[in-house]
Amino acid sequence: MNEAISLEAVSKVYGKGRGAVAALREVSVGLPEGGFTAIMGPSGSGKSTFLHCAAGLDRPSSGRVRLGGTDLAELSETKLTELRRERAGFVFQAFNLVSSLTVAQNITLPLRLAGKRADARRLAAIVERVGLTERTGHRPGQLSGGQQQRVAIARALIADPEVIFADEPTGALDTMTAREVLGLLRETVDALGQTIVMVTHDPVAASYADAVLFLADGRVVDTMTGPTAAGVADRMIRLGAWAK
Image (cartoon, rainbow, N blue to C red; front, side, top):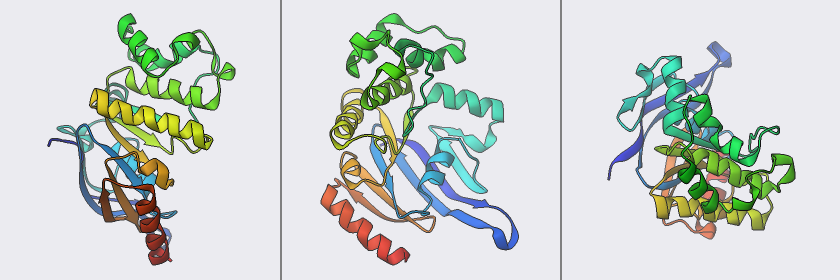
């Protein structure tokens, strides 16, 4: 199976001298195309740094990150911005919608920023997939939290990205709504072959993934395929005790 993302001996250090903090330490891992991978670990384990480096939102201190066949270290900031806009999609806990824009305008915003026009049929298909056909003219303030996150997922899908990066996508949602959103993410993998990398602290959320990477002290210390909520919770308990 081809790798959508690969990290080769990636380290990330913040600060210098005695105040330096190593957020990632020599991480090497490949994430498969069309897979759903969850990233978990105790607080301070390097989860968000892993996601930011993999997505090109932050540059590693050493090592290489490749998206498809592209070495991100070789790209200028302008080219890196273009890559994120055209080849990656993002879903965050805070939704990050523009309050003055309608649902349809929020979804197509990445295309507009890239100077492209949205294909009407593709937009309609994505809106239908996320269950917002009757809400395209609404603004974010007129939607529930779950509906806003569905808009964010549709926005991530509109440019047909190689990878969607999700950072705690259900962190601001109630349990029932969170499961609906997770089911939608799972569906995009199963029905569309989308690749998803998701940081989460929730074992239930991780159970929707194909595999879980566990981080501690900036290193990948364990993996689990076919995760269950109970199995992930048990592993996290043991990791938390080990980290202490």
